[in-house]
Each structure stands twice: as C-alpha cells, then as structure tokens.
Length: 390
Image (cartoon, rainbow, N blue to C red; front, side):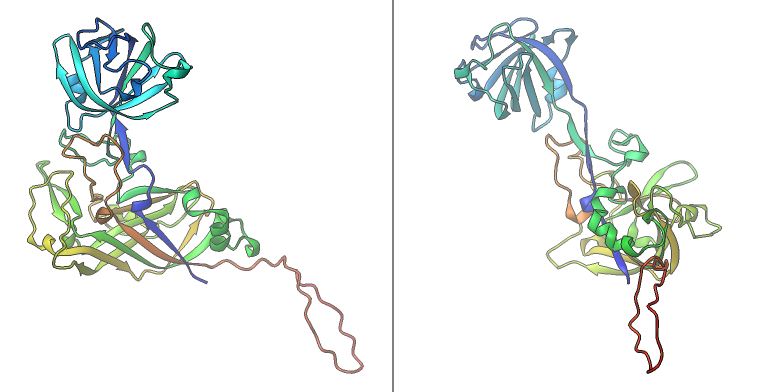
C-alpha cells in the first residue's frame, strides 16, 4: 500500500513575521480641544460617551520615560496601527488605524479610525477619564519570514532555524499527523515497530516551483547575482523528520548533496495562458530580466530514485528544503511592500509557492501478535485442533 505525502508551502506556519513596534505611557486628558495637550499627555477629539467615534488624537511628542518621533515610526503609507490600553482593567482598549498625521512641533494630530475595541461603553463608566494612565502601543509591521537579503542588505529573519520561506520551511506534527492520518501512514494496529522507527521505501518525488524562482550566485570577488531556476538542470531536496530519521542516502563528490534526501531533475515547464504572466520575485531585488518569464508559470522536477528511509512518524516536525548544486536555497520571495512591510498580516501569494509530493510504501512486517483461528475441513476419521498463530 502506497501513501502519498504532500508538502505545500502555501499552508506553512508563520510565512510573515512582525517586526518593529514600541509602546509608551501617557496620561489622558478629556478635553477635546485641538491644541498641545502638554508633556506625556494625549486627548481625543470626541468626548464621552462617544469616544469610540474618535477621528483625531492630539498627542504630545514626549512620552513618560522616553522621547520619540512619531513621524519616524508611522510615516509610511498606510500609516500603521496603534492600540491604546487603559491601566484600569475596568476600562477598554481601542485599536486605531492612522490615516494621516500632522507634526505641530511638540505635539501631533493623528487622523484615526477605530477598528476594534474591548467593551468600550461610556454609559457604564468604562470610558477614558482625565488622569487615566494609558499605554500607547505602535504596532510592528509584517515582513516575509525569510533569510534573503532585503533592501537594507540584512535578512528579515535572522535565525535560520525559524525561516519559513516557500523553499525552506517546517511542517509541524499536528499539521500532518492527526491520529487518523498517523494510523493510516503508520498502520499502527498492525505495526511490529513503533511509529518512531518505521522504514519506508520512497518510490517517487515530484517538486513544483514557480518559473520566477531565482538562485543566488556569488563569484570569486563576493559579488552576488541571481540566475533563474529555468537554468537549473536539477535540484536537491531535503525532506526529513526532525527527530530520529535516516535518509541521507546520496553519496557524492559534491558536498551539498550530503544534506539532500533526493535529487530531482528538470522534467517539464508548464506554460501559462496568453493573458497570464509569471510574477517576478519582488524581494530580493534583482536586475535580471528574462523574456521567457512572460509565459512560463511552473517548473516541474521529478526523480525516479527508489530509496529506503527510516522516518519517525511521531516527530515534532518535518524539514523541507529545496536548494541547488552549490548549496544555495532556491529563492522565492513574497512581497515586502517595497521594504515598508504590511500593517496587517497579508495572505500568501499562491503563485509564489512550491509543492512536494512523495510516494512512500511501508516495508515493515505485519505484527505476529495477531491471533488467527484457521477454518479447516477435516477428512473423515481425523480430528484437527484449532491453531493459534502468534
């Protein structure tokens, strides 16, 4: 019985990470006058009981314990989100989108719209009052969770173990190994060994990547350029459970192969419709222009390798990585909004994802601990006892 496992980067966890953000303490003033509220103070332009309808916030440029410049934190468009939380738990917190801001020297006017609140009801005495201590929190922005060089020449994700890019990501136990799936894959009821030490014959592996994918090249002088994946005759794939697995079965004079589970060869290129073009990778920036990217959409790589892998079906996670013969990850970068990030977490772009399909066959014996009572027809004059096979 073959079991097919699909790993689709579109469904990976945490494709974007939130970076930046800061918070400051303020004192509330219930005046609605558009003027300098004074150091460490902020106001709304709408009075109780309708503070949820606030359209402007008047806020000092100086917060308690820190000096800060809102323009630097919120200047990009859209301007960002803030959450104001009252230190009194009986009162509400409110999240606003900032649509515009005006610098008045020592204070700012923020044009805002409330998008969420927790139990703001001035009629029951939960509204903000003069003297309340407020926490003014500037939300961080969302950026691709990859380790590719960005416009600042540093990766968004510094920790390589936390990268979740379309070609280098993790699949967690709960995402693929629900109890029913685990029973199907591991034949737990009939398995001689525990799911942690199962052997599988891997019959095939197919990898699909977008034709806009790039691969980094570094010359002897350290200059980095990018080539298109269409120039790659084959790719390496690492598909492995993170704990207690054996499957590095490629022996090569090329060192990057030692980290691979499969070698997949360029099989075919799927051409898009005439009115469809392959989206170029917006990040990292590259000066490469390939006219062929106007029509191809996907590149398919396949392998005919038949290998045996020992996989721990109860592993906490699977590791998925697609890389080239020089050990460089295939680069498929989701948009970073030209370096500005996103106010809210965006959806992943389905045209900038990869998919890996592998077929595996369990090759362990059926447990001998199953009792069987054969049905035997005896010839006349003979007595056949029941037999229990164990």
